[in-house]
Length: 295
Image 1: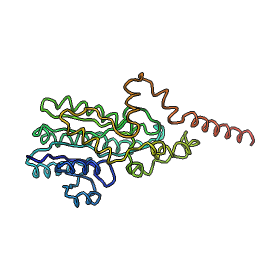
Image 2 (image 1 turned 180 degrees about the horizontal axis):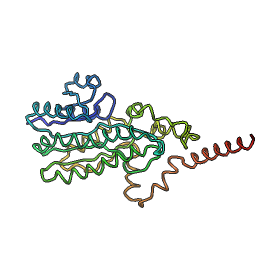
Image 3 (image 1 turned 90 degrees about the vertical axis):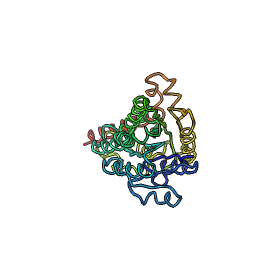
Image 4 (image 1 turned 45 degrees about the vertical axis):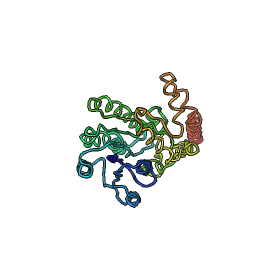
């Protein structure tokens, strides 16, 4: 029996890609685990997995990765997992456009670039693309609008891939990922702290902890359990095209599937404590007005 193959982007130790690589490997797949820095996937090589350097935003790096996999497999690839991702948490009014654009390069454009490059290998195998999306692509959670928008784009691109590649028998699966216990929040840009001139700055003590993951910590799913769900679905003869897994995933699915179009206008203020944010801002403004009157 020919060994099945999978290439996974973003496999640095402790993350989703790392767990997915181990899960596929456990099932007998030949796994090509990639990362920008090979030192961060050395532990996978020690376990018997193939590792390769891949910067998903660099055309030459992508091209070299394709050549490596093609030579190793004879021109076939059964699964491509687009997992590499970047985060950026900042209110839209305070967002740095250069940081947001770099995030979109990784989260959106790289997904297409990598898929384009590996398409011939996937077509040869009638393979499957798995795009790691997020429940945040389905709801306007405050303070991270650009990240949410990037994941909404991934959701649409996945559906687009499934339709456009169907003539060649290539499938595409979207994983709507909820809260997972990884180092995601540790790897955010250093510019994630609210600037002092932000209109939201008076509420920073409420906003910044939420931006650091405080609202999802207790609900987060173990990354290895998440990986098992994703891989189990992937290897089914008829996998779910939209898979939901992780903390809060079920609740998000219910609200986005059965709620009215603006249901989040009702739910999100409660979840994100927007009334408290408003009160803190107004209290700060009033205090400033009182100081001005006292002069």
